Amino acid sequence: KESKMSEYDVTYAGETARSHDIYIVQRPDIPAPEINRDQIDIPGRDGSLYLSQRTVNDIQISIEMNFMTTPNQWGEKYREAKAWLLKEQNGVLKMNDDPEWFYRAKKVVIETSERTCRQIGKFIATFTCSGYMYRVDGATSHTIEEVQRNNWEECHPTYLIKGDANCRLKVNGKYFVVNVGQECTIDTERQIAYKSDGTLVNAYVTGDYEDLYLKTGGNTIEITPETMTMEIIPNWRCY
Image (cartoon, rainbow, N blue to C red; front, top):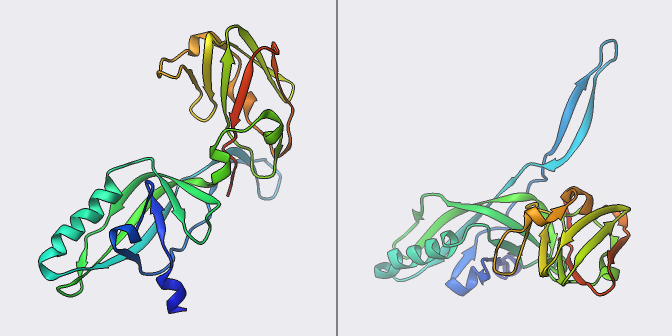
């Protein structure tokens, strides 16, 4: 058991703890997210009804870490740990024993470090993450055919469209119209449309971003005219 634990590692912002000679004391307990629901009380009826809002609360993942170094390098090693964990917010957090999935961390807080002896330091890093966990292969571009089947929860994809015309994007029978102007990205998570240089083009789209979500199960996706090309980053996710 100790041998397996010594091999456990986490990756944050593209860097592993072990690459900084930082070790995970024990695998963190990861809470399930709370699904937001509206409570409805009906006079004369026992109990309440709860209707899902299709949103979940953030979760907090606390990971205890430690390191060993020479006494005169203790402060330098702790500064290295803080530089790694605090340099990037909105980073990707991955557990090495679940490599096909990751968490989207929104912020990191490091609790006061404990110097258990002159050579050893210990601290807890708490990651505030989106309540969903995401598939690694869902964060890359796919063809329409590859994303029409969603085996997980409803997801908020990003559509990458190229062409020089007004295009009609049809997802599950609902239309979204955009004046592409050579290229355009439609980010349904943030509900914005923009060019590759970051210029917003929200004024050139017509439709509801929520209509472009991919539901659990089968989805129909079409784009016209046929001269347009499109790739999709599905952002597959589950609880």
